[in-house]
Image 1 (spheres, rainbow, N blue to C red):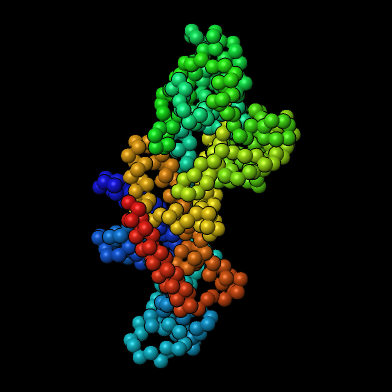
Image 2 (image 1 turned 45 degrees about the vertical axis):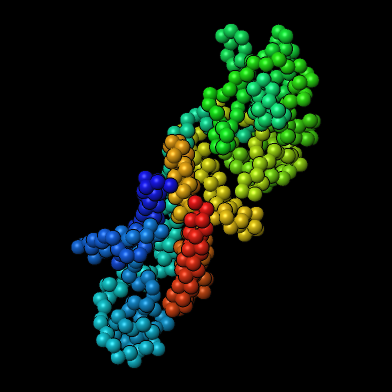
Length: 473
């Protein structure tokens, strides 16, 4: 990592945290809650400014690992708690005091400062439970909304050629030999036939198509291009390598293999023209969803629901090739699909929506994978690990890849904050839902203890992950 990469990561984190806290801020202000401080970052202040109109402190703090919106009455220990039923006053005219925390310390001899009843109305803890739920939801929802809006930009920037359906067009024809033949390498798969003269290249969709081209050629010599990954497997070599070579049926049978998922009869495997509707029990609507579900579930045989010749068909025990990354097995798509034939704004919105939902599901699948031990602790990354990933993507010079990474981080931040864990927004939501069911607020000191313990656990976990990320650099 270099300085520019770190600064880029800090900028990305800063924007995402700002958007998150802005959600809390705007909804709290909309419901009349007094904001004490709006902070980006944690720890000592680098900069702060106090609004003359509202009294809100806007601050930037040294550690870019979070942020917060501090609201009057948020801790439940302010004077306004005296207005709640479990803490009655002796008379309706009795003022609410700063140190009037509960009945137990009513004899407190410290100086008591009366508070304006109008100010008490601005306290977070005096708002209805549904208002507090909306304020807690606002931060994560802003991150999800940002992710969806950036996904719209991503889909538009990707272009019509990258908007694909779930309809099978054909299958990969893969070179399987470990030894090279006329420049072919293991795992190359046939891309285009290159006819002689000015004829347009023809996409190779089946092994039989390639075999027929060899039979129809003079002396069995054909020219074709192949798709091949670069040495580190991160991208395809462009332009696609072209090869001219002699083949016969024996050489084709020896060196090439068609897709594992290709069917041999009506009841087994995929066929060209099939529209895939489900992978196991998960519905898919666009290729990006389909590709992800095959990667996530296709490391073992799956059941596919298809639309074949106008009828729904269930095909079981469909197998895909697999690959292993960080000791984790994944499935790999081994067939070709049709692009969208008509691209308009509705098509773009459809792909934006389903790609975003697939990203949300990916986050939940990752959490489930950790809980079921499919993924080890080494798969977890904190700010340091994410900064390294941002650095690697930025070095590739692929702006779309960097944008996609920001989308994943934003949606990830929104989903993780919705987890029902103490100190996170989801933890607050859980307590408020309990309060709504009980129709009675949880004691402020109990809520404070729960959130404090949760915060300590999260901070300790963050330290452990940071150490792991540093060791992995």
